[in-house]
Image (tube, rainbow, N blue to C red; front, side, top):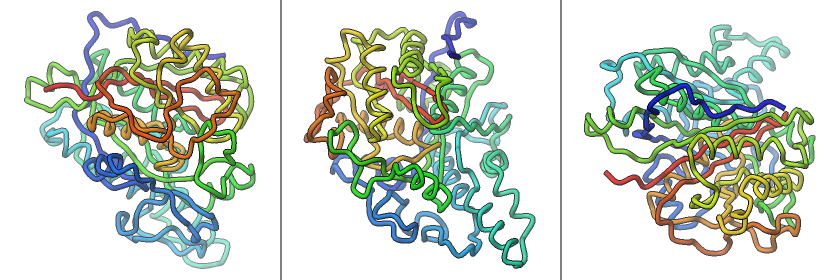
Length: 413
């Protein structure tokens, strides 16, 4: 079993500030609209007949350029849906940071995704199979690395651009790697996060696993029936906090620690012992120098599938120890669906938005906790007040790829 241990090669550590944030999801497009939706307790889940699903969490009509869900006809859209989501969130993040890209020294752009340009790839494949003309130049849009590089180019961001494919931990891993790069002084700034689009390919995959719920997902609930698929993107601008404050930047939050591990157990099923997830959480807490009892809450991965929920509950009890029953644990996928490679970034962004509103949201749909998840504080039904403090954010992927981040929201000017 592999584990990413705390990086102690820096002295003194550079505090890493979040100075920019961009998000687009089924809940809303943009930070302001997302905060409003959280205040209202809304969910982005709705019917998605175009993808043969009873319900899902597609981005609202009109946000992406073509304004529709990708159809099954093979007709090509322009631009690719995944790239459009990435660029919407990236533009907002950079604009909100106040940075002037053309005046920046080289930094890093690190973005996680599992699907990238899958919609374009599927459309081109169908066209080729049916003997229709294939625009070969569009093959670039199929490559996640090219999508990330083109987003950086469009924004004028100097420095390496990297795509991370770490299953459903991709967005969290990208943020963790960017955090390390800034904290060690390797770069003065980074743009990091994750994205994924809804498309027929992913619907077919999860449907074949019989993992998709016909009703809104209900993490940790005894009567849950599976996950709800979603799409979206979220990007963060990370900077050396001293430099950010020196230029008068708003500090929206901080990244405090990052940990990762690998179960080495199964292609799709998590290790029931939760050993890998617990190791990732412990590593993140150690990296942040935060004791479990000092956490304000945990943003759980919480897919609403029985194996994942039970594994995560077991891992939380192991990682948090005596604090497990006192630290609130919340699942956010009932708001935006499972955004796959984007989940670690999209849900972290939601946690930051909730922090800015001073609220700790409940897990929507949770009514009767699974007895296997006992011993955890699982808020349900009503908001709780959030008064600040560190948040542990989990993202776990197929293949047992586990990533955890410790972040702080509501940072004073």
